[in-house]
Length: 306
Image 1 (tube, one colour):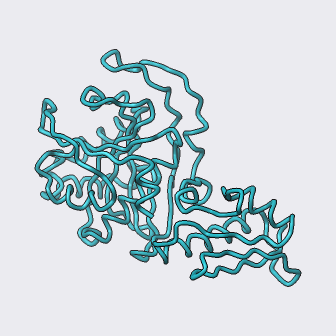
Image 2 (spheres, one colour):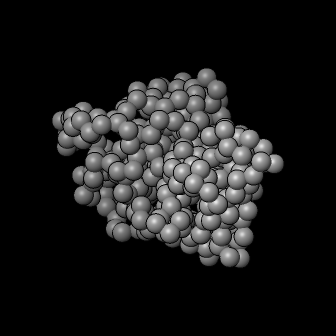
């Protein structure tokens, strides 16, 4: 149990952690949540802060804080390091813990790492102070989501790019295929628990996209759609796109790049996605469409997007 007080002095980029007999006693988890919330508020409300200077008043406080946060030798916590911690926002066993075992699941593709089993339920959750909502992602549930998923896919705005304006029965089979595909993670995005869209995260090394660029073993790709009109617009897009990118980089520390291959004429997406750090590199031809290759690097994301 821990009893300490935390004082954040934003204008001095300082966080003071002091033992206090009068403070509420907290478990490790409660104390860690308290620390994360204070640090998140400092970084989120003042984007110019690149690090926080911690002052720790005794050895027991120092041991706890230094064991939970990546402070440097001068007790500075850099923002780019803080947002790479997976304990707070990432909600399941990290793929980073899955050992490297090379397999070839499809003879058409190269050797690639054996992928961990799919997580269950919520995989990521974070409060976004810029849009004032909790943004989260959870594994798709066919019984719970099929009706809404069918509505989304049959929305003309979605169907223009996905070209899957299918029946409920056919889309149920599609969900089953994605759930049975070890290289794909089908997710429902939510704001404050309200579904807004569908995101398909996938490992690119065993995907058809790997033939078009120098795919690394832990690169991730994204297919995406927003189905709810109330959650369209730049504010929401920046929030959930930043969140899904954050999740994928947290899920496996070996992931250095996230890529997309949208249709080459999706101008609205290109405009929005640049604001989250993604860059368009070139166009190429899939058998079924002309695509653009877009990517985001880990280092750029954690140094430029927070």
